Amino acid sequence: MNQNIIGPLIINLDGTSLSNNEKNLIKEKLIGGIILFSHNFVSCNQLKELILNIKDVKDNVLVSIDHEGGRVQRLLDGFTHLPSLESISNIDDINEKLSASYDAGFIGASELSAMNIDINYSPVIDINHNKENNLLKDRTFGDNPDMIIQLAESYIKGSLDGGILPVLKHFPGHGRVNTDSHIENCVSKIDLDTLYRTDILPFKELHNRFSKYNLPIMTNHITYPNIDDYITTYSREWLSNLSASIFNKLPLFISDDIEMFSAVSKNDEDISCEDRLLLALKAGCRLVIATTMQNPKIIDDKLSYKYFKEKYLTKNIIEHYEKIHDKMLEITLPKSNN
Image 1 (cartoon, one colour):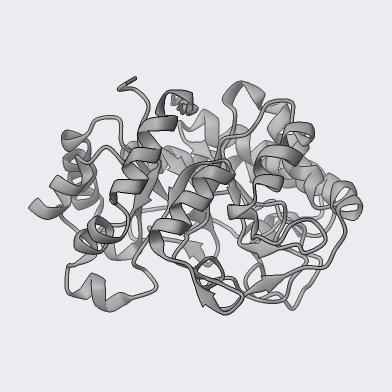
Image 2 (image 1 turned 90 degrees about the horizontal axis):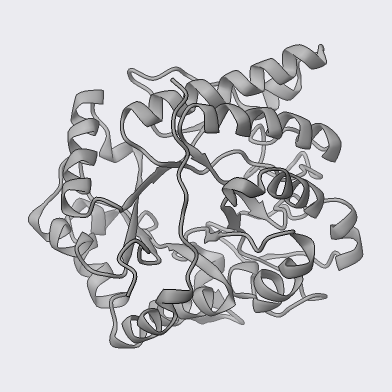
């Protein structure tokens, strides 16, 4: 078994320091990453120490975060307050737009890289077809695919130059719905041909332009009944079959949080944690995010480690991981140009 290939599960921590229970959990072969949230942060020095302790336990574990700018930025005190992607797209002069987008990517990445963070779940390259969509409001580069591609390309270059691997999200586009997958099911009856001509374009073009890095792509939890009965995250049709023809190289897919409402329920029936993770892996996700952020009491009681151990580190999942391990994609991280 190749020890350089990390496990598929990305989880959260309960506090600002690493408990012994969390250390033992990170040692488990299934754990490949940690996603940080604002409750894990007090100061830059504290954060550096936390990440150092994480990597002391497992040096190749990926530390990741949502640091888009605007209203989605987990780290504020001591960090540059980055503009929202929408505010960048609203700049009139095209050259100033492109420069601002590169700067946002570079500054954000440089500051994250200085903390020893590896991955940023940004940029959002969804086409915002619906201005009433509260989930995407001000988080996207707008509704013009060509402009989204141009601005996102500058942002990605800045991120890579700053030493952070950016993640394109939320494939194949979250802009066709007016619902929030965190709290409700999301369904889009759009047809595949229309998606090919619109929403998929930024993902296809940007992933192909940066094929050297095989940029990770985050999957959404939307069901497209004209294409498949499963949400994208659980859809082999989307992540294996269609993606093989959309992209020059099959992307490294990362799921959105499979503890979100739209990933938990199908046809009004709950899907077990074990089945969710297996569905995502079998569909084609390389990394799968599962957090306790939907249940703050678990975090307050410092019991996330127990939840993950009981719900996700099951015999069936471990056996499946061991079976597919040597075929899994490796993750290549950029080096900072600072």
